[in-house]
Every structure is written in C-alpha cells, then in structure tokens.
Amino acid sequence: MPDLWVNTPFSLHGRLAIVTGASRGIGNAIAQGLAAAGAQVHGLSRSGQGGSRGVLHHACDLADISAAIRVVSNITDEHGVPHILVNAAGVSFPPANLMITDEVDRLNRTFAVNVMAAYGLCLAVAEHMQDGGSIINVTSINAALGFPDNPGYVASKAALAGLTRALAVDLAPRGIRVNALAPGYVHTDMTKGSFGNPEMHAARRSRTALGRWGKPEDMSGTAVFLASDASSYITGQQIFVDGGWTVQGLPS
Image (cartoon, rainbow, N blue to C red; front, top):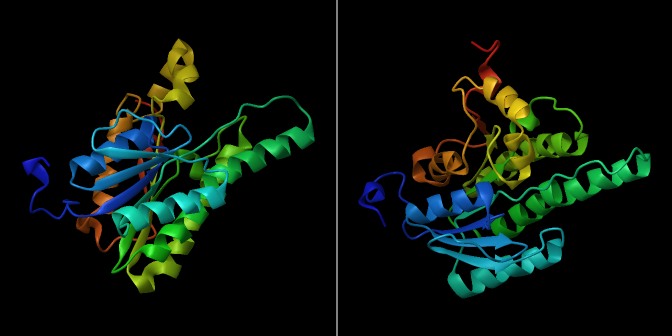
C-alpha cells in the first residue's frame, strides 16, 4: 500500500470493498483506486475478468439479482464483512426501431441493471455491514440533465440518484452512508462512438469548463473519499465529477 494513504483519513486499510462493473471503464478504475488506498477489493462483472491489480474478480450477471446476492454472500462467507459497496455497473442500449413495445423493453432492460440490481446489492451488502459502511452509487450527469435519444438511461440514472437519497435516510440509523458519484462524459467503451467522432467529441468537450473529456481514473479519487473516513459526515449527496459540465452556462 502506498505510503500516501497510511495514517490518513483516506486510508482504506483493513476494509473489504465490492465493486460492480469492475472489469473495465469507470468500475475498473474505481476498483484499482480503492485497492491502492488499502482495501481488499472484489470486482463483480459479467465476464469475471479484468486487469486490475489487487482486485479479485467474480463472474456475475447483475440482471439476475438472485445470482448477484449469492455472490455477495459467498464473498462475505470466505473473506469477511464488507465495508464498502460501489455500484458502478451500467448499461445503455441503442434504439432498435420505433415500436413502442421495443422501447418499453429497452427501458426495462436498462432499469434491470442500472436500478434494480443496484438496489438489490445495496440491501444485500447492507445486511452484512457492521458498525457502519459506505455505499456509492455511480449515477451520471444524466441524473440531473436531459439528454436525447435514450430516455431509459436518463430515467435510470435519475432513479438511482433518488434511490441514493432514500437509502441514505433508511440506513443512517445503522451508520451506513449512501452517496452518489455522477460522472460527466468519460472515455469508456460506452462512449467510444462519440469520443471517436470529431464533431461529437468537440461538442462534448466544449460543454466542460475544464475543456476536456474525463478519464476513468478521474473518478477514483472521489470514490476513495466517499468510501473513507474523510467523508464520515456526508450522506445522501450526489457529487458531480464532470469537468464543470453542470455548472457552465456558456462555453468560454
């Protein structure tokens, strides 16, 4: 563990973390950040694979909430009580056609992972937590702003933000804090189409005050903060890690 984290409020030494979506992108970067801060990290993903240093990976289809709960139970039985949960897994489906039933199905499939799986895992992990803990739900700037052509994704992230606030109240008597980390546009597999399109890339870059796209590793510092004692009096909040997208009125 780097000396940077030792004997500081940001240290996660001796804590067990579960991170969904840990095989790539934002989830992978957060998993590595928590591990670097001293946590024992268990990553959940469909593939159960990843190049994360210091992360133990488990295969799990989050759309099957019963299977996900069993994985959490197995981790707890074999490795101990979890102190941290990060719901970083998320899906976004492109529109197939203009059929109303297909659009409703797309919304249902989006909610199954982005909201229902996150909710189930919050309950499953909180059941095992003792003497407090930290739950971090990865939402999006979509949770607060309208974006075109994917209402199911926008609605799912807004629902996850609302769920964060509700659980913060429900779990506070047990000392469990629940917060949300809301990324802006980050270069991942989900955004590779717009990132690789010069016009779309420039348009999204121009919306940020810092004038650049985010990188997955830009999310890890905020995740470590929310997971650690450094944020011990913070719960029910949504922190935007968006390069200033949500505060900028007009591009300079």
